[in-house]
Length: 266
Image (tube, rainbow, N blue to C red; front, side, top):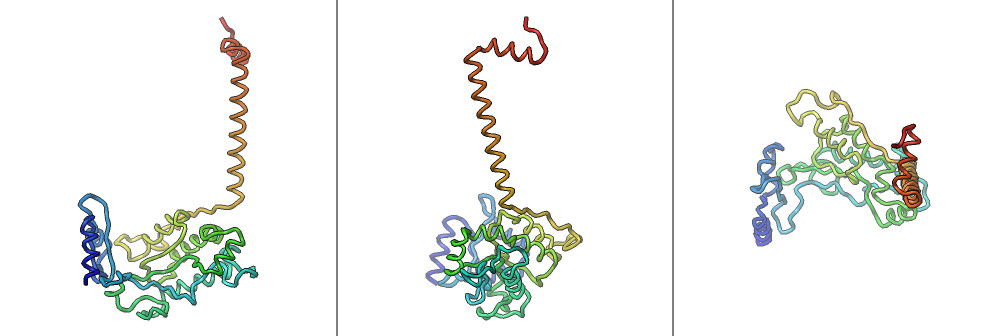
């Protein structure tokens, strides 16, 4: 209780509402937004289990022995998530999050699936991202990659858009992704349009799937090359222009321009 009082005082000092997990159970998004409204404008809500650990109000579905990395078989294997959307790691990740959403409800932290006690755990987290281990981190570095680069090259966020739009999850609560700037808006769009989220009749597949962005080395390289060439041309042109001004003066350049345009200087 002393820990809760201390945490409460911290949030009180910044005028942020502090509530327990059960306080948001069965509330709508609109009702939670009302609860989170700040007197200064905007929204913020502090939420935890109101215990000495400030426990997460959801089931994390993170089991160390089952999490999926981009490089599940280590340094010497050619099996990696960057092989494309049909890669073995991608299929493993899809299975992991499908079970997290669609399995039978259980409060056992060692079993994937939604929580059974929704007052204690009103949220069910789906880990739709590449996890990291010491082995996978070393393998990624050896391939000159990173978590963000693995995310981009595997197109995992685009895959998640397709899965949500196809209605593969029986329920969605907290949807965790990496590299949110890449197709994050598309994920937000299909989540908002999931049937049951609002009273709007058009939902799910009745709403067109959003277009997605794919960044490739080739397109990035071409853009950088074009930018460099354009900058070089502009720089060279400015050098020549200044040189001609120094040699002939402004009046002489005016004569050149009029002559080139077929005009007559008077």
